[in-house]
Length: 346
Image: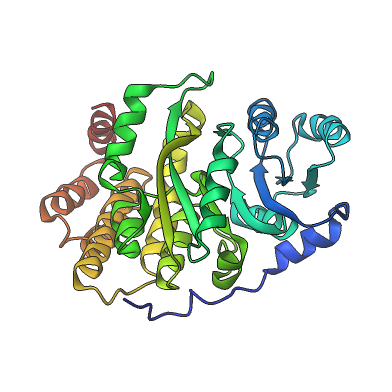
């Protein structure tokens, strides 16, 4: 399987990241540590405190944490001043203005230099043995480039939901994924999407080889990274233990997030062409499905021409869905809006 675009090669930092690097405070010079950790954050001071606490609670202690702040306007800076004073392993990198999700992640990656690396979000947590168990695998398997684990689903208050965690494991195909080195990695990370970036420890060299996250991307940057690792012939290992906690809360939802997400997903899916006919057919199917979803949402926002073009482009994925969307586009606005609201309420 191969990639026929240049996206898998090393990527130079974009101008916005370089400018932010010039403005940020110099991080203290310390000896190389084993694990570099990055928590990118933006206006989530309360949840961030819990994420940082989960790092400080690790049984494996040879780590350096870089909190990369994308211009927060809440109490993040004051909280971080206290935390960095209390623990020299914690570093704070603040961008004066918002430079964007993947650019902020890239700045944290640049600063958290170590043999191994993990990035997890400011609303999630690691369990105390995450680093101990994942570093042990990378230490004992030098041919492995990253190790991913299963994870818990937690609510806004940090309580675990065992039933929802089981459903999540099954939904992403991890219940059928055997422990150990992963065979046919591209199918696992593209078709099943079994690996989660925040529950994965990487060799930094492997991430350097593929350029880590693409610059100027807000969504699907994690899916894209795993595909580039697979196309770059990197090797993954699956550890079925639940060693990370993924928080679900209302801030992750909302129609205002849907269109940017679908637009970025369409760009991500259009970046590659797979040699495997089955995976390539799946990629084309997902592109068409994205076009249908975007088309309906464009019509809902009153952009009829763009919506119709997207629906026609996605016609082969679902003629019935495309035809329904095209019918909506020619109905009077009050009737169309009422039907779309009924669809959302179902």
